Image (cartoon, rainbow, N blue to C red; front, side, top):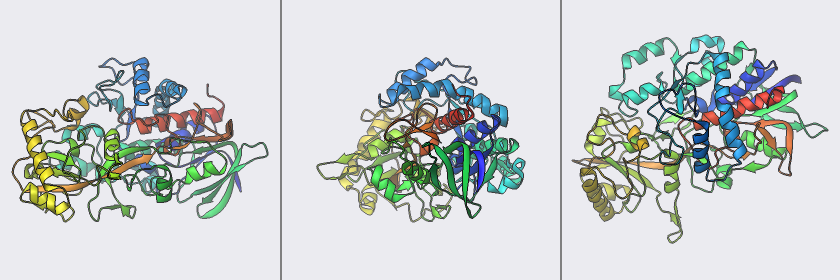
Length: 537
């Protein structure tokens, strides 16, 4: 048995922020991570943080009041406004604290719009901020314990925007190779690396391959300790202040997905260690649960044989769907959504249930594209210069392609003809693709006159299946505005806090903008640590 002030379960950005702030407040902190590597879902993210009215956003007007207006709209009145106002009041102080103890240099992305730029209070850029690169050799013995991202390419999010996410031929590969040789990492890995470095400098003890098993309540009903397989040895860790759950979602546990999500989500884009451990521990001590049917939805593709941590790798399609020369269709061959819209809200259309046919109307779903698209863009692991793989069906005509993949041929032929007529005029009267600033941000800036629209031209033609996926679930124990977990029967569970994807999201069903996941997780990690240290509001 051992004793400490605080145990943080999970080593993503939310957990490491909680550990960093708690240690900076003078507390003794232990971080336990189930996986053999550090960083969780945060490492495979873009490392962006959604921070309204941030101090890096100097070129365009913004305010916390307009951000609150926007959050009210995007959460549709389903979230306690205290959580929204607390987030807005705390996200920038959190960033200042992180910068103070890590040295991260942030920059606002002035071109990245909010995810629903047409809603009141939204802005066309600047709320999403991104960090710089990180030298992983600074981690010493922990360098090899930093989780590798899906691609392993050390670039910044702003470089991806400049070079094009799916146009690998435009990337500076000589620069990238030099960074790899020097141990430089980017995006989510850079954010986690910097947070981890800050934690280590402040004396935080970090243990990998150490899954947490069970929470314990003391005679007063508050959290007194936690059981952990610490470095392979079952250990009871008593806590003087409490435990912060930051162990990610439950998207890789099919039983929990079936029980709670209520949608056929079988292609999570996160590391497979996210199996609901924190959720089960919170349930075990009587936590109230909320937002359990929600996730950070994303449409994904899977290239046969593509794996990560021994599980199939499902890759998000954030920009691919928005590029000119392709359309998404259901089994009837019909478009059903603006392909270029943000991934979270697009999936709400992808999950539409048809009660008449008693099946999901838009699954299976396929991205259909022409030879020019194939020769211009990378699709998962398939680059324009590689042979067409077996998982990418191809045919000389649209009708033959439809027959090959099980789409209604007449429907698809008619749909392509209609889409071609629209896109030749640079308009999409059915789904308004290309009209939103978000759409054009995701399109191909080198294609004119329209970044998002172009008729499907000469064959051969190709199809890849689009799956209903998730970056992570966002339901779990309900917390108050300090991150304190609440009891199912009322009142707080003393000493138990939750942040990140393990907790019921402060954004409910909504997804405000790029980096909202990390922003909420890190902010409530910050608030949890301050509450445990007794320095919260």
